[in-house]
Length: 276
Image (spheres, rainbow, N blue to C red):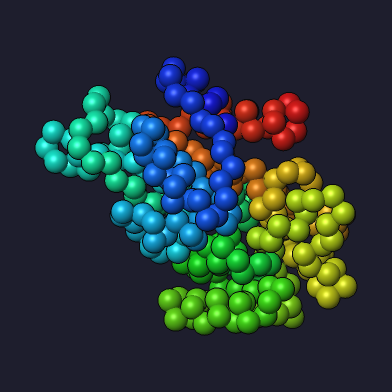
């Protein structure tokens, strides 16, 4: 996705993947800074671990409590902190600034890929971990009317419900299985990633035909067991490919200072996930 975007803009940049153990995350970020990287993306479990490691936090990271995009910055000639990828030369210290581009991408994915408006909707969120917490807070901020939280560890869902109630008192938040029809369901668990995974929601406990749409953050496989079951139940369905694209596009623009070439990036993702 990113390399396709760089190529489309004629940038001599490269995006590479590195597997980093959680206990070595600080070393990895420091190494990337020393090597002259413009920034990095982080995935689980690093998004929460990175928060206290950042020199500065964007409002997005503060609001949603996780960092998925790191920007390396240095001072320009006027002493203004500027992305290193947008400077001709870097002099002096380089700092890290953490962003969260996931939260807005969730909303855009639901709105565009499911064609459902989150504002005023009744929604069920499966999972209260890092991705689930970010999604829940952003859905509440967007103004869903009622939000149900289901998590394997019930106490985690209850703690998140208390946080949402404190921060967004206009949103009715509950834990457990809904007792009404829904506009959409979001899966923020990892169930569906591996062959043989079960469903993150028991259709007997909550029949999927009671929801207009189902959004699964998992994008590989392209159709998870949850999405297949939802499609067969007559729901609109979408996987997390749109969310992946939109969070990536936002990171791309932070690093380069240029609008992300969405079509080139989307085409690269579709070729990778769908083979076309």
